[in-house]
Image (cartoon, rainbow, N blue to C red; front, side, top):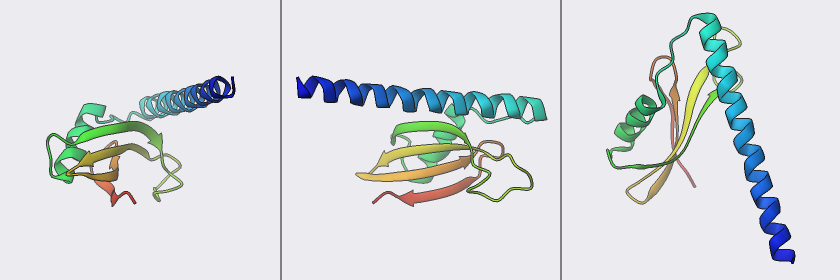
Length: 111
């Protein structure tokens, strides 16, 4: 019974995170549209991250579109960023790609 309760709690927590991620992505897309900003696609962000990781076959585990104006200084209060987790060559990387320019903002080996 305890295992079932734990499993249900884990599923509920994961669903909450997923919902929050979708809400953040919807906000970023709506705000970009309102400001007349064109975002690169998720596929383009993945391609850029794979190139930087040095492997076209790098496995991308997670991709989120986020507003990172607090983390990356910007001219205003909006900085759309594709945040990715990728595995290449047995190493795991955290990669942030500017969702407007395609510039790599962060490429960090995950500990």
